[in-house]
Length: 99
Image (cartoon, rainbow, N blue to C red; front, side, top):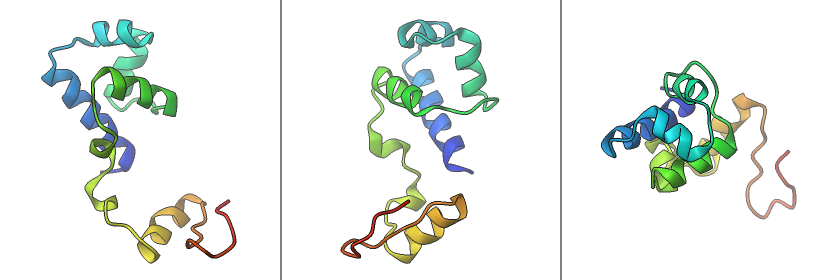
């Protein structure tokens, strides 16, 4: 499962656990019903601002949206996760920043 799918799954489970309809969550987060529904069905991407608003409204702590396989990443493991996405990992203290 991709990271974005994992995040959407966590948000959707939180919505269902709280008994909030898509229409009600859309109203609370100032999103359209269609846009939120498509997001929760994986038919469109989740934007960072939406993630923040949804996580706050659904009371989902940040650690819950981090896939378990990323919890212990350090050094080379982080490098393997980031580099396929075109990002760079620079170890702490290397004097360089990630681009």
